Length: 472
Ligand code: LFR
Image (cartoon, rainbow, N blue to C red; front, side, top):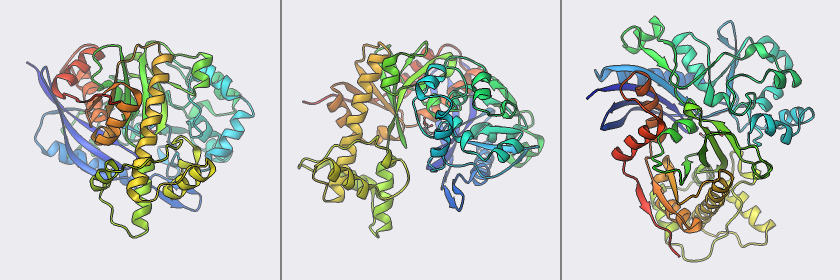
């Protein structure tokens, strides 16, 4: 049987990784060969990604990957969505802004002065999130946007540095708000209406297509043989994760749980109903033209920011120990609204939770264990609610919830989500994003073939999920 190897770069909000993936008719593995922190930098004009250091570390990771001696046939890149770099004549004009930067507020105001959220939803099908790319473009100084000749989303920027080619990968393009839901072209009319320059957007490319081959100088630095292709994958990390959700029937909801909890179903066509608008759901582009009908729910961000706060206060926090102590809490803890915008920016989460509780006449948690339990219970409730809404909007008879990503390791969260949803939770794979990236490349270079269903079948056969049955 055929088998082969590919390299996957996966950039997350807190860390980046490089994997060597091996795929065959009965094999699917993702070996992590590099892991590096992603630490946003705050400077006078705002919060930025240190994208050069991410690229540097990812290139080092590629070197390590090629050093394994494995016959690597392709490279694929995914990252978080919506953020971009502006370039002129191939030169980056500044560090990309972080989507949690507060500048997006003025972009929202500017865009909504021209088109309401409901009008935008009818075109682009997106959940209102203040950082969708169109709002970020509108927040740029007009001089800066006018001076740029190219805007590249983060994975496309990395691909450009690797290959010299400028493309915008479709699943990620769908998160900009500048592509009509389900379409495969930029929404020129909306760009014009918003006074945004069309010329800075690059041609769209679908997952599975070849972006280019490694530039000779890059290949040399990475110890890669000449001519290695960079393949478009579901470059939006959530799109790659959904590829590797081992859904076996159409009766499943997925939660891709990392920094965010992306809770949804896969559908064939965008759902642009008044109900979907009211529920603030999104229709993002998936691999093979599928639609990811989902809701961005707060994820582990609120927990990791709480831990960061306790560390700033001088406590030593070990996450597994903290979660164990949270599991032992027997007193009632408050269930707060994790989607409240106050929890979006970095900062003192325990103080904000206490503030929320005071406003809602609920006693605040008292210990770190209680805070942690309160966060987990609140996430589980939000996941359960969104899972039921997703199923109803997508007309899916949901019986199971798949949890993939880092959250699949959080036993308390998985169990409490099952309990609160009244549905079985199947947890894993933890590395769904990397596996989805790897699978789409492997299919593109001919190592495996078939539909998403057969790719998911391979995931199910090689990565048995862990089952959590709902308890009364
Ligand atoms: C998850 C994710 C979400 C997106 C958010 C911001 O990593 O990609 O899908 O809404 O990050 O880009």
